[in-house]
Image (cartoon, rainbow, N blue to C red; front, side):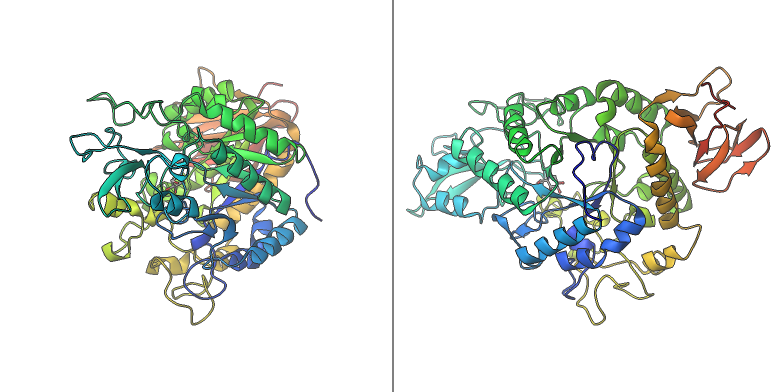
Length: 537
Ligand code: NOJ
């Protein structure tokens, strides 16, 4: 098979996020790896996704799960080798799967040779110019240069010890001190990253997920934040207009490789700002994070869909979760009703026009692991917040594949303990068991993705099917070709006019000839007959 060049492959693509540490462990050290992903490509083909996005696998001290990169052109030994990556890429392409890799431009690791060099040098030297080094305030420079907080807690500045053994300058890190921010005013930084993009493009990757794509540009002169400003006001160091020049330059690099290599922005900004990243000379996609934040609320979801279709058009890239967010089953209430809602939410997302990202394990209906022991927690947020924020480990627990005892097929027999412990309840959630159960979440996802391939041939049309008779608490819409999606956000059953033939439902429905009952927290897909039963033509 193989991937054919198609300029717009990403527009309707379903892209599966592989959180590498937790996907599959081939060598048995308790940590997922590239050969583990390679061994499960058929699972992804059977699931029906078009592409995978693999989280950072570059050389890293792992202060932030690999988002602290020490060598942007090599693979961390715990994940394998560059040759393993090339084999994975080739195997994926042979199966028609595209591969997107992460790029982390806002910050490097404190063990990156550039930062090591900067520390070894005196203030004002060339190597320091690639980062944000400043003198401190106060009589002896003992206070940070400004009051910016780190996103993970504590100040965004750390003071270094100079060559003479004395405390000296401070450097900026929006995340942990092990992640010094790069200075994008420095032409060497810009040139280096364009070269890094070319390195991976030359190897054949299909695109990049840009970490903190709204970072990089900082307010000139590093002014203080206004005292008493809202905690979410990060306008001095995030989502600044200057950042778009960088994306335009990157787009020019991508375009020299043809029109099927893409970039997707990770930018937590409101929809109207997100649209800026999607201008024709910038990035192809931007995660629709307002959608994640809408929760299980008919009104909020409807608003986000309307804003997105109006503001982002067909380019919306829907996301229900990722390795930074609480898993949907738990976010939507946990237990049986959380799972019910997560299944309905998946059908809703996959019915919308545009592309969709699925976070590994959501297809298995995995809940967040909320009771990881304190001493198992690895997310730097736990330490940085003074043990007040338990961080994101609960959505990063290694996947259950098969068997009834840990590690549930995550690694080979006799493997080391998984890097985060798996709960006993996961014995019933393994992929192998679910593949044999027609009612499972895995089978629901597989059916949905299979159907979606046919539905997408009907174009991007979208219209709400509301009128004065539409019961509250539900959303219904029609896409091109008579495809209809109905969702009941609960808590009561809703009796509705039947839109056509039932294609798929997230829970059993009661069907009559002309009416049907949509139970609470359930979504259903329909094919309206083309005479327009239940819908207009
Ligand atoms: C966003 C990534 O998804 C997250 O995991 C990471 O901690 C931050 N960016 C910093 O790189």
